Image 1 (cartoon, helix red, strand yellow):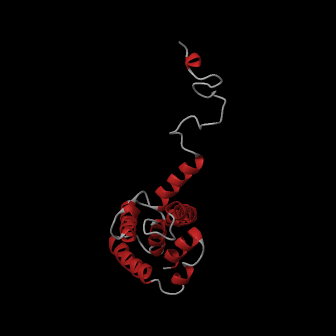
Image 2: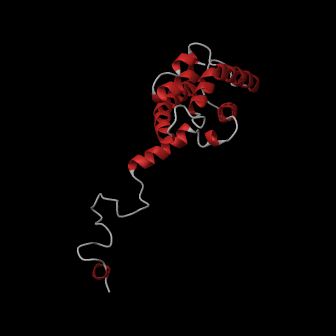
Image 3: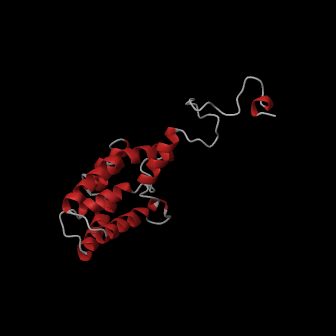
Length: 166
C-alpha cells in the first residue's frame, strides 16, 4: 500500500521539496529559535556563562588564557574587540529576551570584550594579563562612574557598555 493511500484524504505523507513550509516536522527549528540558540552560545561565551559560581570571573580568566596562548597581532586584537563588542550587543539583547531577565549572570560576552580591551595597549605576557585580569575584575565588580550609569542603557548596549568602560 502506498503512503498516499494510507494517509487521510487530501493530505500528503511529507511536503513537496518545493514547499517552504517546515511545519510538517516537529524537530525542524524555526529561524528565530536557531538565532536564539546562536545568541545564547555567543552571549554565554560558548557556555562559560553557565558555570554556577562567578561566571564573569571564569569568562575573564578564560579570555586571559586565550590571549596568552593564541598569538594575535595588535591589529587582530583591535578587530576582535570591535567584532566581539558589536556581535555581543546583539547576542546580549537576544539572550536577555530569551532568559527573561536584565543582564543575567550567564551573559558573559561583555567580560570577554572588556577583558580583551583592558589589556589591548599592553604586551600579552602572563604578568600583564594577570594584572589586567585583576584590575578588570575589580573595576567590573565595583563599577565606578561612568560604568555604573552605562548599565541603564537599554538591551544589549547596557550589558556591554559597563564592561567596556570598566
